[in-house]
Image (cartoon, rainbow, N blue to C red; front, side):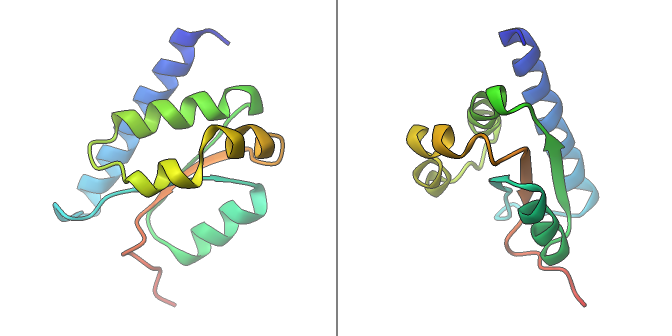
Length: 110
């Protein structure tokens, strides 16, 4: 996959995040939390939080896409970088298939 394709995918993902935030009335202090996830982790996050935006990603570009999306988000949190340093990304890339965004302040009501 070319670098331009990964950059385009990151732009589309961030665009979707912006639209979803507007549609769901995010306040200025609310932001997205990014996570790499397996299918099971993705389902658990979707069950716990609303809204969520997930995309399935090829393992070989997951780390690069995560970095690009994080850089494009205006309110990216520094703890994301601590959680997913390069060693973590490359050790877990084979397990993770999804990039998922959620707002930890917006838990789903049961």
